Image 1 (tube, rainbow, N blue to C red):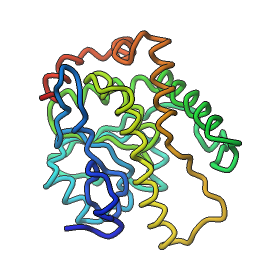
Image 2 (cartoon, rainbow, N blue to C red):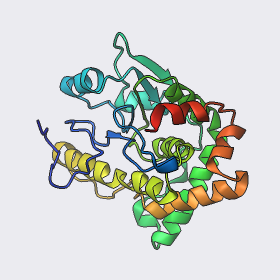
Image 3 (cartoon, helix red, strand yellow):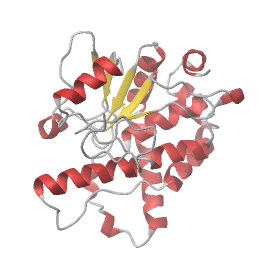
Length: 252
């Protein structure tokens, strides 16, 4: 069944068909270490579940089989959009990925002179978030490595979620270009959310969300490589010890 706001002709195959969760997708399917692939059906990334319908939640729990939900947001963000409901058999983990609030920086799409300036801004933001929010990233990887199906998310499923996904896929040996392509897929989720927002509330005078150019993630990976030697070395530096377990679990 194809739900509202899902175009089967244009939505990439990684996306999970849900009605009011707009950026839920499978992290698997990418080519990885030693000619293997990342397993599908095990790890998912998403935007928030505040607008999710009962059917959306049922799909996540009973079709995808999710056992762990990792929320990377500040608890105060739940006032704006809620959190995943309490459900028997689903463990909820609040791992706030610490960072300076984007709202305090005040950069909008219209404030950048060109894409290169946006990419530089995002690279600085993401690498700063990876230093400040390292405990959240480590704890998220630990839950993923425990072996049960998991979804991790923030508000839009873009920045904080994109960082965790990038570290995970790097450990699994996915090429930087494919990691950046996974990050850039958020543009489809953002478009779905904007269409829903505009229909429900009307189009805002100024669009506030920033784009997700693949080059921003490529530049982030390059800077982390320069600082730590590699993304996997970064994961080791923040205290994650489960790289081999992740590869055993998620590569086939």
